[in-house]
Length: 340
Image (cartoon, rainbow, N blue to C red; front, side, top):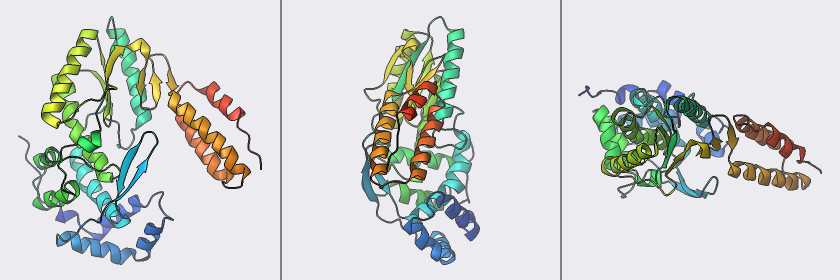
C-alpha cells in the first residue's frame, strides 16, 4: 500500500499562497460587490484567514441557495466570497497536487486543458478506432442518478483519508464535506465539489479500465461512454457497472442509461457524435434560437447593449465550430436582425 502523505496542511498556509488563491478566484468576478469589498482590505483579510487556518478556528458561512433551469433544473448552493477564496486555496494546494495525478487520461470535467470539446473529440476518435477493430460497434451510454445529491460523504472522506493522513487537512476537509447533518450529497456550486466528484468517480474509472479492460471509455463528470464489440458485451458490462456503483459508491444509474448500435449516434456533452461527423444537439439549437429572438426584443427596447450580444453570439459560435454546423450557424445569423 502506498505511503500516505503527511505534514502538508499548515506548511501551505501563508500570505503568498492565499494571495494566489485570491487572484485565481477573482477572475471574471472583478467588479462584483463582494470582490470589491474583500479587495479594499485585501492584506488584512488574507492575514486574518491565515491566522484562523493556523489556529483551526476557520468556520464557513451559511450557504446561499438558488435554482437554475438551464440546461436542467438544479439547486445551486454557494458560499460568500471569503469562503470561496479559502476553498480555492484548498483545491489548488491539496486536491490538485495529490489527487489529480491519479485521474485517468479520459476524465474530462473540471481539468485544465480538457473539457466538453476534448471529451467529444476523443469519443469520436474511439468510435473510429472501434469501427476498424470490431465487426460490430455498440455504445453503452451511462448517466448517474442525481449524482451530486447522492455522493456518500463517508466514502468521499475515506478516499481523501486513504491518500493523506495529515490530521489538520482531514479535520478541515470534514468542515467542507460534513457541512450539515445529512449523510449524502455535496453542493453543486462549490469549487471543491468539482474535484471531490472526480476523486469519487476515479474509483469507477479504474474499475472500468483495469478490471473490465474497456479500452474505449470517456467520462465527463457523471456522464460516461463505453464503446464495445457486441450487444452481449454491452449488456454484461452494464450489469457489472450497476453492481459496482451500488456496492462501492452507493450510486445508481438513471433512466437515460442505454446501449445501442453506433449508427444511432451518441448524445454526449452537447453534441450528437458519429464516427464520420458531429452535430449540435437539438436542445442547443432551440436554446440559441430563443436567445436570438429575445435579443431582438431587448435591443429594440434599449434594454441590452450590442457588445453583450456580440460576446454571447461569439461564445456560441465557438461551441458550434466543434460540430459540422457551418450552414446552421449562417442560417441562424442571417435571420437575426437588430433594430432600434
